Image (cartoon, rainbow, N blue to C red; front, side, top):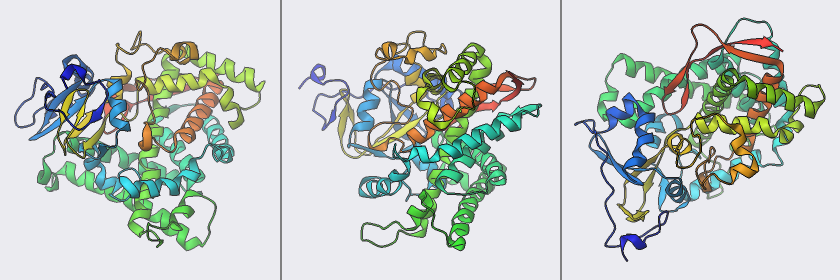
Length: 458
């Protein structure tokens, strides 16, 4: 078998003539490419495809393989040769633990998916509709008082409240949403540093940044413990995801442990709220920057509703509104970097990948690649019309992942994002105000640094 005979995108046992991927330039000892991933990570990841389909990086002493094409990222995500692991997931273990659905592999992951999947079935989502409607319209009413809107705190509040009320049947959450917002900002920044500059024991030193990180992480776990304890104390068993977790059985038919319950609630409430809240922030930025599309959303909603308040049942008819959400996620994906680990010697696109190797890829870079998208940096929701979307390469746009690691809450998240966008664009025009900073803040997720807007009633 020659290198030329290896089909790009294939995975499998390596042949003797497979190549070693090229090494990216610009590494600086002892950090390797970690300094570039700290200084300007989005630009660094976006230019890697110029050097090859698979490129070697150095993060401290570790060699990491970066995959740069849609075809190979799809092959990576779908292949059983690669597990959820690597620098991203190691950095997240302090938050997500090792027993939740986000970080588990193999039989444990399949069992956990079976436990949580009923809450996210397509036919289960309409039951959450009234809550989503109530929260979306409460947001528009609250903003009617005028003044400057802090998009960070407001986006977190609505994301956490919807998740808590739909999945955990919680009526708490305003004060806790604020705690979650503040803690996650600190934790996700710290986890990103730990991922790209793996200095190990140095992060245990009692330095101010480490102490701040540890306090924020402890508060996140305390918040989750409070939610679980309150449910147990209530004695109630509503038909929700938390009840399913409290009554779930392991592979032996025994109740799952307290740590697994804790880690599963963390996975529901923290990364999910972080990514949805970040997307709401970017949607507000897009509505402010592109008022012509905000006007089209309003016109579409009114044509569907006849002037009544938009409802959950309208969402599937709001084609342009949904396309605005998708295009926002293309240009500003909340999850911009992902990692996997090879479980055996294998090959990817004709390159040798050794057992235990960590692989990294960037949805941000993939989704902005001019090889996949005409006018790649333009905000163009119409590119998702059926007649144009067929020209987008396979695997060039998977905002919720693909394969057995696809986010189970994809339909749930899209429904609330489209409903919130429809409600807000119908009620207001948005303008950024003095002091607003919509530049990208990079951590494990992407969000605006400090997005501040004024809601102008229509």
